[in-house]
Length: 318
Image 1 (cartoon, rainbow, N blue to C red):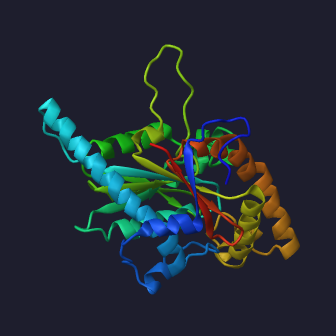
Image 2 (cartoon, rainbow, N blue to C red):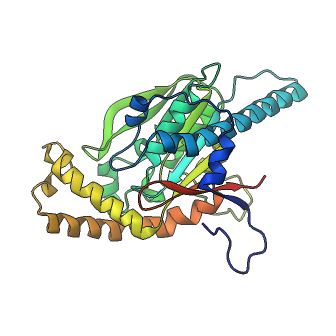
Image 3 (cartoon, rainbow, N blue to C red):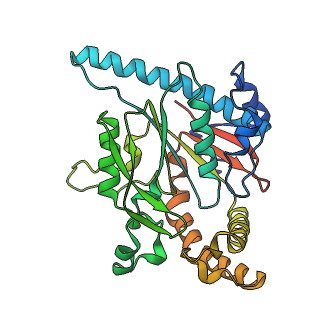
């Protein structure tokens, strides 16, 4: 993965081959069993013991260094200011395209980090819960742009992250149903003072327009201490999306409650054409206009090949 243009003299990333990165595991212990790993991956996303050992254990070891350093800095600052405050959780953002495997990465990290000693409390939320309800998106003409930055209830998401960072308890997040493709009314998950919070979503690294008057304009990534971008070539992402769509056509779409139930009886050719149309109209446009431009803002980039295996790792220089 070449993170540097031909005329760029300074590369903000150190790029590691898979073998180079795997050696950075050092003596980090494997704390997950094979049967646990099997439950963590999403549809069609490849995850096995080797992937955890060579990619995620070194990342877990690195994160342990970052978390320890941040905690020591936080407490030193509080001593300097002469104040006592609630504990401040470490927040990790996980970004990337639709179908790239963000959920798998987030779940693996949650499982590994929760096995650290002395067993930190590690919670995870997805930004899907902060999408506007479909009724609002329909009214505002945004249904075809679901997942774009403007389709999220940003004030509510920012308020949630601010409360988490401030150590308030408990903090509620809305719940999203991938079956009905909508927010579930009057249903919430509670996040109660985690030591580490993982926030997963396509556009979590988005920036805001700079204000002319210099006033503070918060963005989601302002609350992150570390961020991971899952990367793959567009042609590969398109292939994964179509494959996932075809699988869902044969499974979840047959549920009468499914928002996509109308696609359940499509032939292979019809379903492929439909998936490609959705990809081009919505997911590719979102990737090119909103998601991919945020990649250089990530602390770490995991680049996947066609077989879902991480091939290179790029770590931002300090």
